[in-house]
Length: 151
Length: 103
Image (spheres, rainbow over the protein chains, first blue to last red):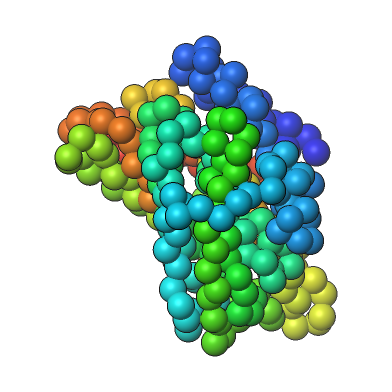
């Protein structure tokens, strides 16, 4: 617990080197343990305080149809709607579906690429959260021929 | 011990593309060792990027992010010579910061 606190302090100290507003912006984005421990993707979103997302073609989500190696699945999502605050990736059938939360500031595009692990074939979701707390999503089923989470 | 990140930041067409390759085991907490004992989770949980000292992006990651994580994002604007710094903190409280100059 102490280490976590230390980490938070370090993060805040770094933030303080920026502007005051960025410090406030950052403080609102502390690590959400409950969300990352949620067992379903819907619960994870709820824990993050995100409304039930509606499917939208404004969320552009790229993922492979078939992942030969579930340990490294490239994913990418962008949303051109104004005022997007967060981009969230979730893998429905992973033991912990919430993969990553990216917080968008006014200085970056709502466009992130990363790589995730998948234990088995599953639906993968990209959720974009707007400033009005509206949530938009795109989904895609990725077939996994070799899992990435097992032993 | 932490190993350095590889950060590439390239400006062009009014934006800067930042690509980062981090070195981290990203142990999920799901795997078992040879004796059937669960290997405890150990992964990066917080990521922060600054542009000339200003925080422009933060992220929270779970164990579902791949080993040796890759991340790409875009800064609105940016020019050669600008400084990009990236910091991660993992579940053991270890952290690492690396810097790159925009080309």
